[in-house]
Image 1: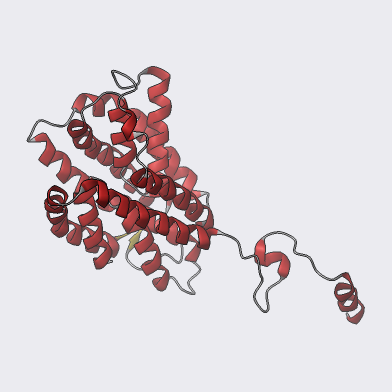
Image 2: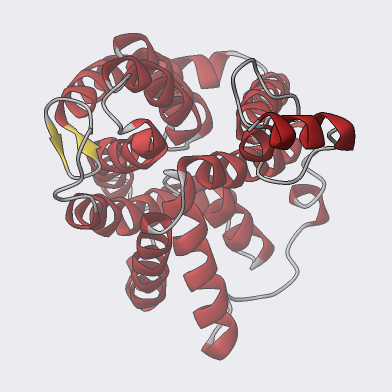
Length: 297
């Protein structure tokens, strides 16, 4: 957890994102150790996502405060988009409640893959502005709700889709990055509260968990990310930004591959398993073997 916090802070400072792409896989790996044999294994991804959202609260608020001192945050955008972002987050958290761990891994894997490809091949970012202002009306409702729900399901702050949306809408990049930190706050606060509420009373969760938010992970990651975030900012100004984004994109693609691998159902049953239960669908079995077993019974 400490190591993931260090890396999350570094990544947040270098790329202006919340660090959820790093935190969620790390938490899912570490927390699985504490729930082995407790019956809570299927809720590990829920806890990892909820805890990630809680950690983003601190980093996003700190970032908004720092950018606001330079007058770079467009609070009018945050005010007009807040209801739709928050509404989408609530929908996403409620949907996650009824999903199993494998489904969440699949969603996370696909989402991270898309973000990774964007970092490696930023084709949309190169197109320039497609509009002169941010979307309004039903389009704003749909996009805002989608961003909120999508980020809540992934446990991320929404920095990447928010910056992409604003730059395509003609917002200068520095103002877009600063305002995107506010999107992270709008997503993280209701997301973390919702994760606590929908996970309240669940059995088999890791020790010191409030619903789907693990307090140990929250404290460890937050403390470490605060230390390394300034280092990431300094590195971002010294190193080649385009190359760094490609390297991070490769990391995201690899992370996605691992998550999707574990999300896939087992195609080959292990010894002692019922073939029908091992993969969730029928597997070819020899009819004669089945008949012989029935005759023996």
